[in-house]
Length: 275
Image (cartoon, rainbow, N blue to C red; front, side, top):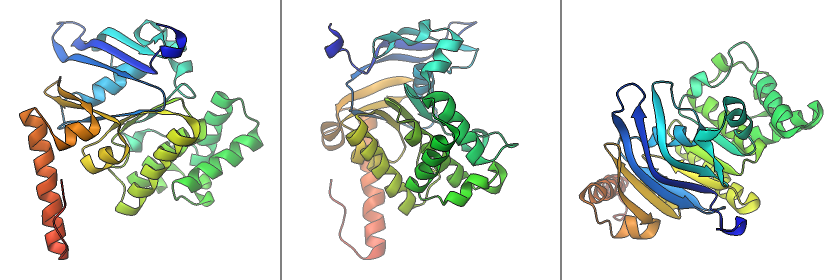
């Protein structure tokens, strides 16, 4: 395979197992994702979605380890040293994880932390990093005054948007977003999803988007991987998976979403949502 044909992300028969017992938690995950494309990962809580993301980021807890092939732009991610993996996270792979309340150091302002990350990863001057940090906060509907705020002064949704702002500022080539819009209201969800679209279109960023919100996944994803109890039960083109699901579990997810949407429209006095 030539460099030109190398997928942005490639996983083949990936298993995540307990280090001591060898018991598998996640099994048989395989996909290839080209640059500028978006993979949506859906499934119930505990299905293994977050572990797949952490395996790609090199952030699995010590009690777990990944087996199989995990590559980013041809780089063997599990084979990286801690220092190499830390260097890759940032402009190479950006992460938006679920734990927004613990993502920032409580002793420093949001502005100081974002500018420090930008200076270290992007080799920017202090003034350049400050300007980019302010612009990134504005893109997720946060005022510049937020630069002076400490993490404890912000809500979980605001901190989630701060994490997204960091990724926008870094312009990472791959963005791994694990439930990035769960804590946001409808307006901010829509705006953040538009920013993800913009990141793909303007910077050809690759996106792995994990969410319980099938509507958000449909809005962004080119392909979908459905997980249940640590296994992939269905995968393929997003339109095909959502409109003609084959596996009973996928059919259940889609039908449940349609039922909820129709109930919501009835409550508002509108028409039923279409499949």
